[in-house]
Amino acid sequence: MKKKIKKFIRITFGMLLIIVGIAGLFLPILQGVAMIIFGISLVRPVLYRKIIKKLKKFYHRIRTNET
Image (cartoon, one colour):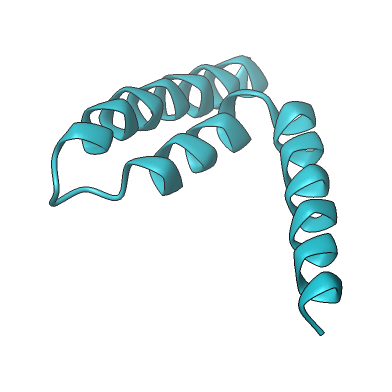
């Protein structure tokens, strides 16, 4: 029972962060992209790991091409 409640709270908070992050894309005060990524990490941890892996590969390529 506790697991279900924790999962529900985690997913609800993650969805809230995603919604606030989308609003943050249009409002200059909020950091929209950061909130969206953090919300995804709460809702779908597997998807978050894939996104981070692709970002690391992308930035590594940019960093090695500049030197």
